[in-house]
Structures are given as structure tokens and as C-alpha cells.
Image 1 (tube, rainbow, N blue to C red):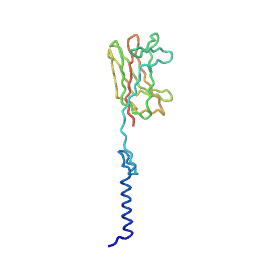
Image 2: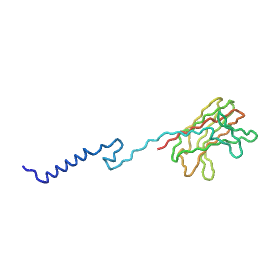
Image 3: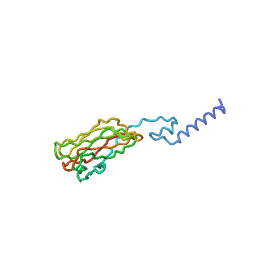
Image 4: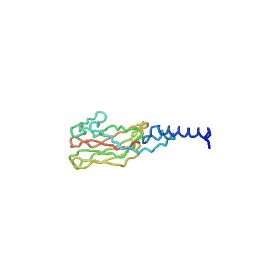
Length: 184
């Protein structure tokens, strides 16, 4: 039985396809698009990241006086009503805030400092996202994972931390703030 020209062409085509596949560079891991042109998007895993806000970022409003000591930031204008110290919070759009943590120093155990993380709209309306109280003597750390509206929306809001009660004459100081957040 003699092979027909159609049979020979089929064998040559199969051989050609085999040679192309054999000579084609092997797809590397996660490069399925080379071998399979239909792309299936893999679900991203959130990445945990941190924003560190140093004590040097905290300032007083208006003509208020804040002090930056080697131990941290505190309020030094004791002739006026104690107003807050504030610092900007610059997180990427779409980030999800997971935790607010504050490191502080407090000499007197009866004193108390307060921290609030605010979301501020274009009309300067402040919405509290997280709140912390500092009340232990010595070097302390407080944290919360109770965050209201945790998704950062830089298109419509800005973000700020404000702290009350950190007086230089009472030996109280903000040492640092850390915000834990996730991004995709």
C-alpha cells in the first residue's frame, strides 16, 4: 500500500507542528499567556504595609506652640487653652487601614493623652475613624484595629491625626505613630 500525497502532507504537517512546539521556548511560571492565549486574571493577595509618622510631623494649629524634644512632640504654650497637635496622614488611594498604633511617653500616671484619626471632607467636616487614649506612666504603646470607614478615598477626603493632652510641662510626649494598611 502506497502512501497518498494527502497522507504525506498530513505527516509533514504533524512533524512541523511537533518541531515548532519542541523548539518554542518553554513558558516560565506565571507566563501562561505564551502557551495559552486566553488570559485568566489571578486574584491578588493584599500586601501589608506600614506608614510611620514621626513626632517631628506634629505641629500646633494657628499661633500655637508645639515643641519637638529629643523625647517626642508636646504642647508648650501653657498660657492658652490646650489645643491639639496635628500631623498629616498620606496613604495611597484604595488602601485599607487595619491598625492605628501610638508610642508615647508620660511621666504622671494620672494624665491622659488622646489621639484621633480623622477623615476630612471638602467642607472641613471631620469624621472620626479611630480613637486612642494614652494613660500609663512611662513609655507606652496603645493600638486599635477598630477603624470606621477604613478604605482610603483620596478623591473625596484628606486624612489627619490630632492629639490632645501632650503637655511639655507635664512631661508628656508623642514618640511615633504607625498605621498598618493593606493594598492590592
